[in-house]
Image (cartoon, rainbow, N blue to C red; front, side):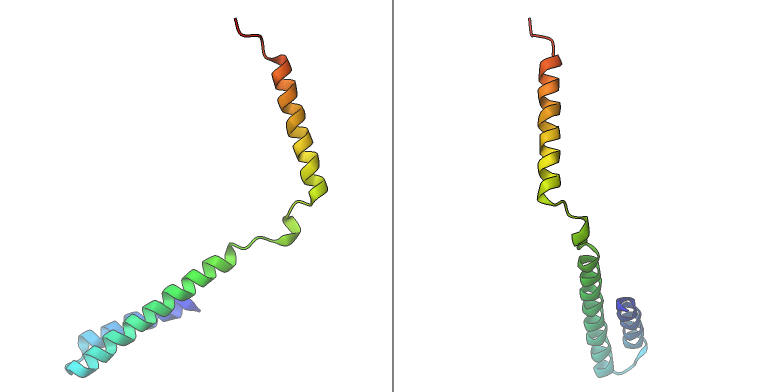
Length: 86
């Protein structure tokens, strides 16, 4: 839907360029600016809405604790298998 504002903004700009009346030109330019601002606001809101995470994909505390224990076990195993420094 927000892409419609962009197209209407270009149409208002074309109208402002083609008209011979200075008042209509100013109104067309203001309309184009307003429509482009609406387009940017719609684009921003669409990107922010798409970036939200799904709550069902979040890790519960028990799973997080298990992952931390695995990471600590891997660190301890890597520390034990390293050769001593000369």
